[in-house]
Length: 573
Image: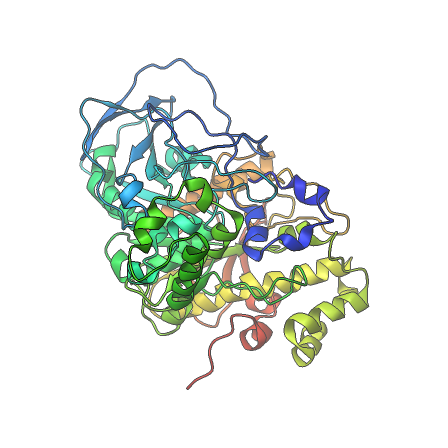
């Protein structure tokens, strides 16, 4: 997670934030990079004190397992119950002449490659606050975690789960997530990957023929690598689940609708980033407009032309050659990284805006599991509340009117009266959570369930650990905020005994879905299948009665948001 404690120390200058930057508060961020296995990192990097550090437990190495991939053998590490193979290139380094080109196969190597540490993370800036770029353009690496026990004889191999990290498409890395609970308890192979970020991953220009969407193309290349190599790690290339949170979930959504992803995966899990995720204007700061994670290709291309001109690269031709000669530090600026943080649609990789593709049934027919956390927006609002407070009922009403208009504001205030909440800030956070995440996710569930087996959840543990390191905000406890389910799937923070029990159940559900397409778990409440226009989602919380179905549409006022929300369906033509 990013060290965003600076935000509270810099409240005098909060209006310089852009909305994607605020969204990074609940996504995994860089932090110190572990040494790469025999590969120098040439770009400038910074060293920050991380909010959450990945703990490395030293233990005697019994053996260094070797797996022969399609590019050459790799030597991993044995950790007892699981083995890891990190820093495996799944594509050629997109450097030099390969900058802003679709990923190409990694070259073969001679001898056994050391896979005992992750490869470099992709070029990125600190999520908030000052600091230069860290990481490298040579960053297209995969990390594989497998159970140490031999797979069952006579089978086709273990299910494979491929994780796409969050970070607003400008931050994050695969190695931040330790998946041993999933791998060992669920008897699955887990692959985490890096992909190009910001201006390096989502740039567009006429000389590129549009905005190719390199970040998503990288992920597709990773999935092709998984298809070629899963069996070598004991996995089943015919049973691959893609899953991700925040920007990683938006990536999964994009792959559901991308023609080029057909056949590369067989199940999908979308965590807090459905195809319809969006935010109303001015909801967090008075200078921030509406947030949409996907944007028209033509806008990205237009932004690319302007950016190239400002960098001194313009003319009838040769612009890309000029841009490829520019130093990475001149490209990895806050302005350029944030400008190119939307996933473009309208091109070959993503022909249609994903939420419209779902509405019209144009997506791959695979089972889908998706959900959100109960209090998604609290962590985002907490980051800006000191600078843009909601002191009383009048301020709450002003926010409603500014973001939704006077007519809709009255309907929203009726559904969410400020007197029903301990503070006006909690009322506003609830409005935003329902409008931006919960109800759009349920609406996408309706579209999916008309064609494929679909399962919905809501993570509801309001005592989940605050593993972000962010200070408490008076009047706005984080509760079950955006990203707070991640320590229940990955080794990110200590959990109390009831929470560890919930984490085990969640790992069982997630891996059962990867195995069969249905999230069943031994000795756990059944997970009802999502049906169009019904409230059958599973609430996930600790305790004897913490797991069970809820009427999510009613509880979160989705009838209101289906009509008035920021991502309401388009009117019929």
